[in-house]
Length: 115
Image 1 (cartoon, helix red, strand yellow):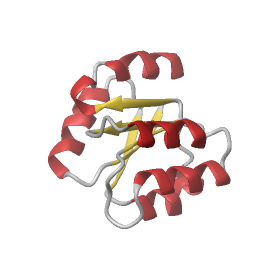
Image 2 (cartoon, helix red, strand yellow):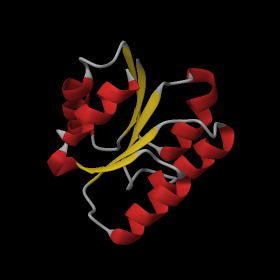
Image 3 (cartoon, helix red, strand yellow):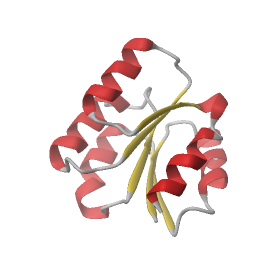
Image 4 (cartoon, helix red, strand yellow):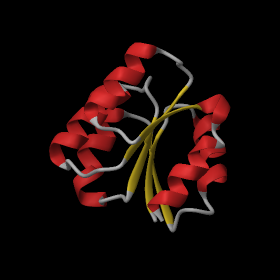
């Protein structure tokens, strides 16, 4: 499975990569929502793991743009924010999950389902 990871923290990005590498044949990394939107169509990942707070375009806006480009895209939010409004917006966009980084083990279930 080809994963696209959008996370602005180098430390957190490396941690997530180590965590998901058993599920991925390749992982494309970006720090900004702008880069994710720009590269989505050419990279064609099987799933996107996206933070909310990013450099440039935030994750919610970037996810909405990706969904416009590719309505069947599989986007999973990984966030520090347990915020009802963020969760509601993610659901409205059509993302498949909203996972708190402190509960990253929940990601396993979703990645297994996508394999």
